[in-house]
Image (cartoon, rainbow, N blue to C red; front, top):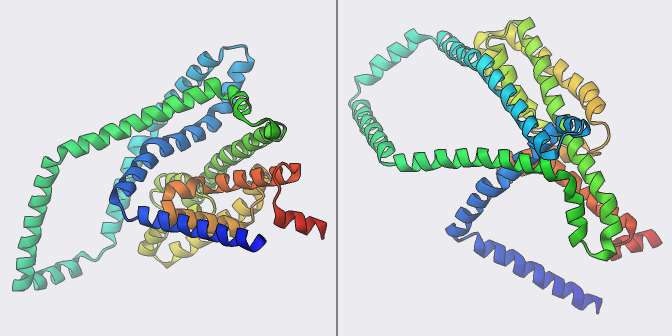
Length: 358
């Protein structure tokens, strides 16, 4: 009987894999999944992220006796004001640093060699024909952009609608987030209610610890790197530190990715800057791994670094930066859910039951 069950399960698994493979052959399925990802999944992910970032401030207003709707509106208004001030104050400075970084790279290129090479190359007939075809291609591309102005407008409207949707999701989570537990328990089977009631606060704690902790880690890392850049004399220090802050939200590998541009700049400047940058990278990574992450994140996530690396790299390969950003908390939630149900004995897994008997 057990062999028949195994064979049936294998047949079902193979049929599911074959079905997924065949669905992947249809382009309309890819387009549908892409729309679902961009229009629904991405705004929900960023909305939940903003919710947990702003939740401590919103809780302060609620504890002061303010209604949840007014507290959520005030929290979003303060956040919008702070973001506008930051963009207004640092935006122009970041643009100036970007221009300086570009001019620095151009300055360290030997223009004389490029000019000599260009003069030799232009005399070749094949190169001249290639240049003319390139110019024709550029003209065609510009005309294509003009004709596709509607597509550009549609993408702009999609971006605006996504931002608006993120704000609305964040607002309703701040306003009605306290009712989420009751809604889940209302539709939960009676058999699992006690377990789910214990599980939901743990899941909330995991998400809150990860998102707020990751934001603090990213800010701390960017601050350390900025101070280090100023000390070693790295140009465009604020711009490079801002890049580190954004990419540091991707666990573990984000900091390594953010160091690619600084290493290119250091290579252009010279060997001494390369040595200084390497020392800065080692110090910042050591402080992050030994002090910042253990102090802020604690042992809530309880994930081995190797598992973290495989999750992020695999998630990035499958779904890009968005999946790499959210794969670690999703893994932690699944791990917590499975562990909680197994310990509560609401779900029986024969393999685990046999191990416990041994």
